[in-house]
Image 1 (cartoon, rainbow, N blue to C red):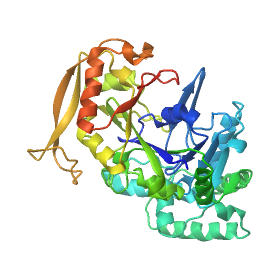
Image 2 (image 1 turned 120 degrees about the vertical axis):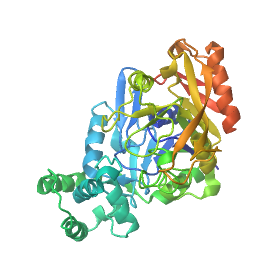
Image 3 (image 1 turned 90 degrees about the vertical axis):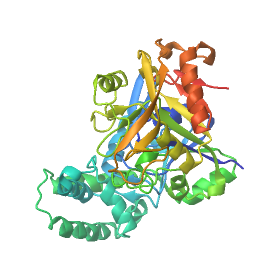
Amino acid sequence: MKTLDVVLGLQWGDEGKGKIVDVLAERYPVVARFQGGPNAGHSIHFGNTSFVLHSVPSGVFREGSINIIGNGVVLDPTIFREECQAIEALGVPVRERVKIAKRTNLIVPTHKLLDAADEAALGKSKIGSTLKGIGPAYSDKTGRNGLRVGDILGGDFKEKYDILKHKHMLRLGQYDFTFPFDLEKAEEQWFRDAEYIKGFDIIDGEYEVNSLLGSDKAILAEGAQGSMLDVDFGSYPFVTSSSTACAGACTGLGVAPSRIGKVYGVFKAYCTRVGSGPFPTELGDATGELMRQRGHEFGATTGRPRRTGWLDIPALKFAVMLSGVTELVMMKADVLDGFETVRVACGYRVDGVRTDRVPYDVYAEVEPVYKEFKGWKCDLENCRREEDLPAEFMEYIRYIEREVGVPISILSLGPDRDQTIIRK
């Protein structure tokens, strides 16, 4: 019987999970997305094709694959339809390859209004939301008010929608807030796009996933965002609204913890963060700007410039601990090719006290303690074998493996599929 293997981001998102799922999908006939919403942007590059996925699992470009949108996801019918049509324009038979769990919650138009109103009310303390309605959709899910994909198939779908909309409008009436949004037009499109979803295989996701595992089909579970944005263990309240750790794969797909196999933890050779919240190793100088430009660090969904900084070992070890990561995947080491010196935060001073633990208090005064490495100053993008990698870079890798206690099994040295080294 096969296991469910999991791909997770170990930082603040944007680690490059989409590419790794696309690379690994060759080994897995099934890819399943287990949490998050269309604020995620998973970039895929192969040949002359580049594509950013928001809701569709990253295995969709592999011929014959099964791609499941799990119950832990929140789905916007309009964004989903636009994404699917763009994929179909590339000649990919999306409807044949994508299945949607009935228990997947829906993002409705008024969720976006609530998202914008909530963010405006926070003022300077705002979270940095993408305003796509993800937070309010998850709030309705846990508040037992949400609409789900399976409801689209029922005769009382419009009635359920109207009840939820009424609750939202009452709440919006409490805000002194205006937001340029044509609700009537958005609703008309939304209901057309809900009908579009009916053209897909709408499944009992938990039964389907366990049946596939039982029939000896390996499944790769794909998460969105990153471990440091986990709703429980991330830099709360500057977090996403779902569980981005490995445990989220169990609840987001309906799989027992004993069925989890490999856990691939994806991290950049440096760090980035979008939106507000603590970022101990952030660089607000020319070095940080160089990282941003060399790494094209702008949001795949929003285009927002990402904050950049050095690799953070305490945060990486924390994420590995939470999810039982078995293999590390290092992304974008090529971005650091031209640096004379590469730094790594090996610990913190929190309010003047040395520690290697991630602090509970996001407002604590955290000073990173750095270790320096000599830069490798050569073009890693052209390396295709581990034997081709420079000694300085290998020293950097071995240090991370010793500190974290997990091997780095995959190195990504550029955006394309073939710019990847699978280590022995």
